[in-house]
Amino acid sequence: MSIKVVRNEKDTLIIEVIGESETFLNLLREELWNIDGVKEAAFFREHPELDNPKLFIKMEKGSPKKALEKAISNLMKKLEELKKAYLKAVQ
Image (tube, rainbow, N blue to C red):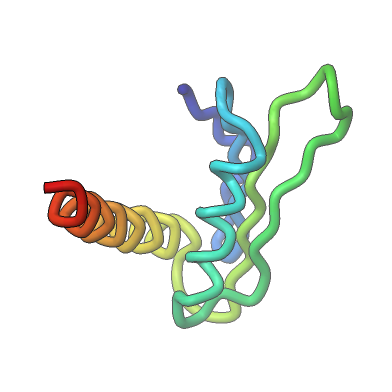
């Protein structure tokens, strides 16, 4: 996976995520909606077969970069909890 910043403004961030599907971006989008100050969070693909998906974040207040970092951190915690629950369940 690699990331290309398409647009980086005070209240807006668009990143292109190379090598991942909409499924992965959907996790990020959903988690972004839980972050205070996020006004819009979406992903899109300009052409379904030719373009990589892009994640769009628009803030009411705060930094979109900080919001994305917080969403990633939150997802990492949730995935670690899932891993622990899974390992406990299969023992």
